[in-house]
Structures are given as C-alpha cells and as structure tokens.
Length: 149
Image 1 (cartoon, helix red, strand yellow):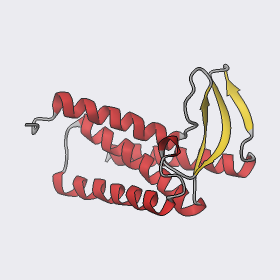
Image 2 (cartoon, one colour):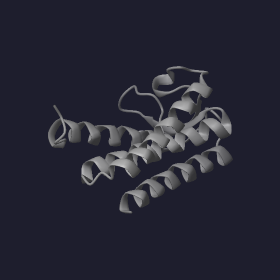
Image 3 (spheres, rainbow, N blue to C red):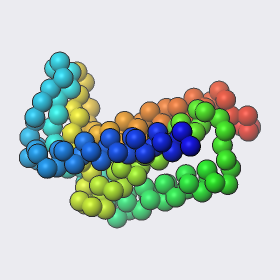
C-alpha cells in the first residue's frame, strides 16, 4: 500500500510540474535558477535519455506502457516483500508512467531541469524517479537478491 502511495505521489508531482511548465513557459525559455546550480529551461524531448530514438514516440510509448504493465503483473504474481525492491519498482513505475503520459498526450516528453555544474541533458521529475529507482534496483540485485545465481 505504501509503495502505491509513493508511486502516486511521484506521478502527481511529475504531472503537476509538467502542467505548470507547459501552461506558463515557452519552449526553450529559461524561467528560474536554484543557486546557479540548476536552471529551469523548458524543452520538448522527442526521444529517450540523451534524445536517443528521437522521433520514435510510438516505440518509446509502447516500451513505457509495457514496462508499467510488467511491473503491475510482477507485483500481483510475485508479491515482493523486500523494501528496496518495492521502492525501486514504485519509483521506476511512476517515472515510466509519467513520461508515457507525456508521449501519448503531447508527442514528446516535457523536460525542464537543467544542470549548470555539468553538461548533462535536461530532465524532469519522472527521469529522477526512474534513475533513483534503477540505482536502488542495482543495489538490491547486487547485495540483497536471495534468488541470484
């Protein structure tokens, strides 16, 4: 139950921030900064990370939807109990769902967080959830997965 709440809260945060951006900021426009470390710049990403598969919205949408369905099916069938695994799945699910909604609604992903201290692609809340979730999943697999061979 708590993991569903985590996923729902992250999904809501992602949707709300993207809604604000789309309604209030022009594409390519920078509208704020946090201590010169992060700028907020609205871009429309038609690909995946680092704009890979740019223009392949159908394929990327399908991958995201299949991933989300896979997480739900895994959760129902396997009923995972490990906190790390459950947290990782909740984070990755919420991020994949958030970006899938963008692709299906707009035909691109709304990105807006730009790092100034390193040259890195502009990203969003969903991307953060996916990345942190993937990191947690790696820790789980490497150190806590009792089924590993």
